[in-house]
Length: 151
Image (cartoon, rainbow, N blue to C red; front, side, top):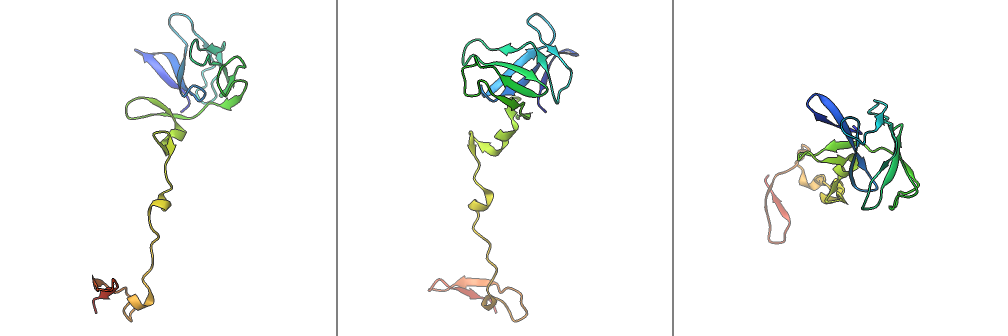
């Protein structure tokens, strides 16, 4: 999903999308009081016109065409003058729109690798097995810290 429709009754009145430059959502109103934007109806590769300009903050100014965000040069953020794909989004359990890549973060920081958290699994040594090959069961640990096995 790249757009989230906003409805009043049965009518879609606007679409929200995630803006990577601003790290929050913007919306294009397609019905209701002005200003409204033209929409091509394609939620996978949307085109809205005219451009969207945010007043205040980082003065984000963009054109969304065929699923790509074209950031205008007069924007006051790091993506000014760049073109990027409209990111995939999801709604979290509180109804907030978030980018898909945030699913792999905790408070904005990458999650640690799962393998790094767990110690490696060691196979029992041959000495720790019955002659049949079945692992022996540790009964207790001796005073020297070595395991004492059930026979």
